[in-house]
Image (tube, rainbow, N blue to C red; front, side, top):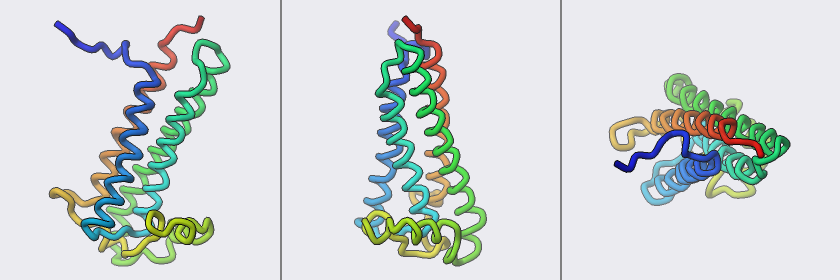
Length: 174
């Protein structure tokens, strides 16, 4: 019987899974925006940024050679930062769902101010420009509000990040 044991999964493979989930979710968001017409709000854009950051940190966590203590520490720091980013995405998704979407408008929020201050919307408007209120943006997609899908993704990324850290520290230093 061919079963995969949890101990056989490396942190690099888990990092690849994190990149695929996080960056894939941004691809899905862009598809739903540009093809299905589901426009993002400032909190949606904040989640996109956090998912892009999760993927970038996962790549950085997979790069150092973990056979040395220094490489393992660097990989741990990037992995931990990725977990923090995924946690931020979870909080942001839940805030969007329970607070911002219920208010009818999400203008002049922390997310809006961040987007204005960084200039991301001007730099790459097709990806980072908010175009809807939070109530409009939290439409149902396959029966669930968009923000709940995002929260589910963030939980998956948190679990993958935790497993990646576990795998990293269970591997042998030579």
